[in-house]
Image 1 (cartoon, one colour):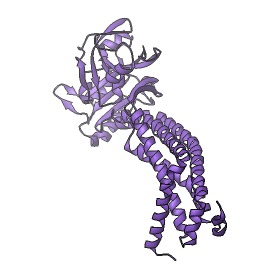
Image 2 (cartoon, one colour; image 1 turned 90 degrees about the vertical axis):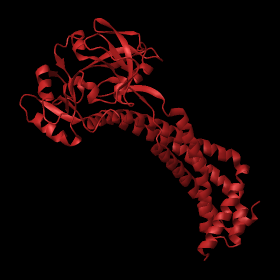
Image 3 (tube, rainbow, N blue to C red; image 1 turned 135 degrees about the vertical axis):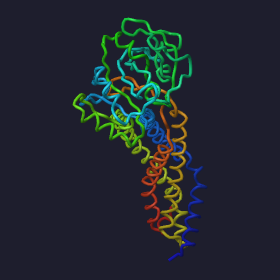
Image 4 (cartoon, rainbow, N blue to C red; image 1 turned 180 degrees about the horizontal axis):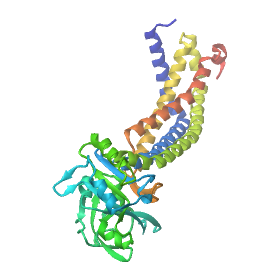
Length: 399
């Protein structure tokens, strides 16, 4: 039995001869690489949608932030509070406070229709009425063009994602909200969070525009620290004056993204599996072609004492190298085509559009490479086994 060093030397020699023969099989090799690259590019591209959407949601929540909804509501759209209830919430222990009062923003959330820039079709765009504390509750907002709206006036500021996706939201333009025309006075960013999909204004001037009286749909708060969440929650859920559910911002936005990310992930892997089946047949064809063209060479090496395991391992390495090239090409194509591509989709909880950017992450690229190597492994194992078990005498007689 060959020693470990001799065995490795045998694998190295066979693998070297196999790689040198690739130009003779360039058509089959190129087809396999293209097939595997296609699988990886599609898989990574589709999953980058859910990664981008999930990142937009996760960037929206802060560890010391919480959102209060009416008990039983799964989104702001079906929640509701009166002014007295929002005051009870703002007075709860655990909320951070400044000289201007508690960091609690009672908010109104309505949907308006705006045309998309690319297609002109209408989509639901969130319009959020906020109170002054909102900009300290969410301290990641920055005005990048124009200015902040003036409190008490019919003015709006718009998230950068909404500006990119929907028509008529540039600074200086006006939008029709309720019975009024409201000028767009500024554009803001929010670290890529869901707020960039929204239009913001003063809640007090939004209420009469939609005949909402003195009502709100949610209260967003900033806590003194993440550890005070339970104290804040218990004080409200045990208070008979209000019927509420209290959720950490991070948990709330994770729930908002769960349905869509699951749908996209299942869809992405389903497509990838179907395409991978075709790529596996391509890899099988390539490696069987390699075995057929090197039958006498392999038989000669076997006659000289090269072991079956060395033949199997070397052919598997060749198949994995071809697959790796395809995976790297597919990953590169996915990154160039999809990373930071801006689009919008439907948030199924609020039935409003969410703008976000595709994210081709390192994790997705690694998963793509793993898929490519699995294809190479499955596509190479059967041809390698056949090559190692060819009858030496019969193989030497083949032309």
